[in-house]
Length: 301
Figure 1 (spheres, rainbow, N blue to C red):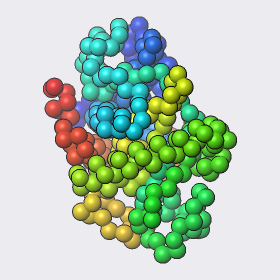
Figure 2: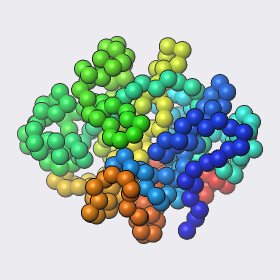
Figure 3: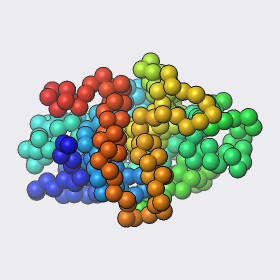
Figure 4: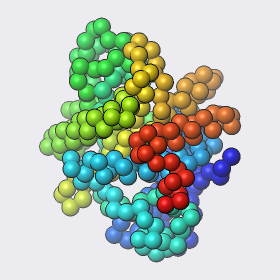
C-alpha cells in the first residue's frame, strides 16, 4: 500500500491550525492549505489515513473553484508549488497535488448546507416530522427521494465535537440578516451549478456543504467545494428511491463504522486494510469522473 500523509512538518513555517483533514500554515499575506490523507467520520479522526485522499480533495476543490468563480469569488490563488513563498516552494514532493495557496479570509462561523435529496440525517428527521429546518416537506417521500426543490439547512461550525443544525433565522442572528441572505442565495446557486455539471458526468449530488469567509468586505467561497468529504455523490444510473444509494464519497466508510459496536466517540476503531483500500478507490473514482484526471496524471504533470 502507498504511503499516507497523516500530518506535515515544514521547517521554518508557522502552523496555524491542524484541522480534521487540513494543515494550515501562515504564508505571509496568504495561507497555505495542505490536505492530508486523514479522514474523519462522525467528527472523529480515524487512526488510518486513506491513500491519495488529500490529492483527491484538493484537485476536486480546484476544479469547482474554477467552475463556480462566475457565481462567487473564492480564496484559491495557485497550487503550483514553485510559485509558493519560501520555505514552502522547497517542498514540491510533499505538497504537489495536495496543497493550495489561498487568500486570508475571515471565515463565517456557519456551515452552509444544501440538500436536494432526502438522505442521511434529513431522512432520519423526516421520519419523525415533515416539518424540518423551517420547511414543510410533502408526506409521501421515501428514503433518497428528490426534494421538490433544494433546501438550505445551515449548521454551526464546531472546532471540536459535533456541528449543530440551526434555523435560517438563528444563522442570520449569528452573521447578520443581509450576510445570511447572501450566503443562502450563493449556496443554492453553487449547488445548482454543481448539480448541472455533475449530471453531465452521470453523478447526482444529493447534498453538500459550503463555507464562506469575508475579505475586504467581500464574500469568498473558501475551504473545500463539492468533494467526497463534503458531499454525497450517487451514480445516476444506479439511483433508486426507497433505499440507501451506492455512493462515491465518505458514506462507504460511515456504513462500515455503523456496522460496528462503536459509540462514535474517540478513540476510533481500527480500520481493516480492505476498508482503507476500498475507500481510496472510491475517492479516486470520483476524482476521475469529475476532473477527468487520475492521481498519477496529476503527480506526473
